[in-house]
Amino acid sequence: MPEHDLVPLLHRIAEALERLAPTPAAVNDLDAADAFVWHAEREWLEPVPVVNRVPLGLLRGIDRVRDILVENTERFAAGLPANNVLLWGARGTGKSALVKAVHAAVNDEQQPGALALIEIHREDIPSLPRLLTLARSSARRCLLFCDDLSFDQNDASYKSLKAVLEGGIEGRPGNVVLYATSNRRHLMARDMIENERSTAINPAEAVEEKVSLSDRFGLWLGFHNVDQETYQAIVRGYAAHYRLDLPADQLRAEASEWSITRGARSGRVAWQFIQDVAGRLGKPLS
Image 1 (tube, rainbow, N blue to C red):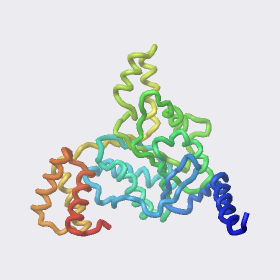
Image 2 (spheres, helix red, strand yellow; image 1 turned 180 degrees about the vertical axis):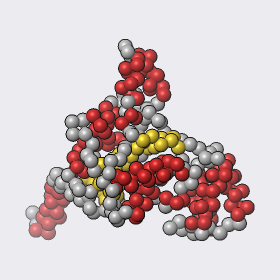
Image 3 (cartoon, one colour; image 1 turned 120 degrees about the vertical axis):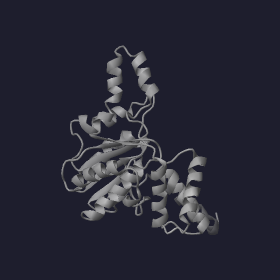
């Protein structure tokens, strides 16, 4: 074979060998950033340089739960005992936004970088023991965050979560707390609980097995749909923060119309309205 034909062939062989080679082990450095996303398949903590969040002061209508979560997080960051927290309630009411905002606020008020925020996806819950092993070996305090946590029929992964949170031999590492959000207070649909009750030999025990998962969270914080005035206050707060120059009457009228077309009033709906206004005015939200 001529030499000029051999070189491309060797390149193709080398590329094929690279694709067949095992993936190199991920390097996990909990000091690399203030926020991470857990990738279970590679057991890798991916640093997140910029977190998608809004300032704590812009979250309105949730003052009581905000103060409770801030206090719990401040204690944890200071090395004191703190509870796992379940934030449950209506969609779009600021549950996940509050977790991210509190993380940033506590880090700013206390020692910068005191807390690492680690997001674990719902489908990766079975890998939680491996993540806790990594966190346990670090001196840094870690706030694990699972958004939209819930379980459906025949999903047994909730049992591993129960054991990890409180019931296992090792227990939860002292440098870790779990904050989870859910639309369901007991993390599973009502029809799922009722089905367990109707088909079990001992209905009370079957329901207790399912519902006891939420008892592993020391704090339950409930979120509910906001009234008209709170919704308008959220809109005004966003508009002032991002310097969106609309007459007050026009802003209020358009915000009301937006919520009517969406069929809901919530912090998420207010934020979507503000994005629309900013787009029309040609102003970036930064």
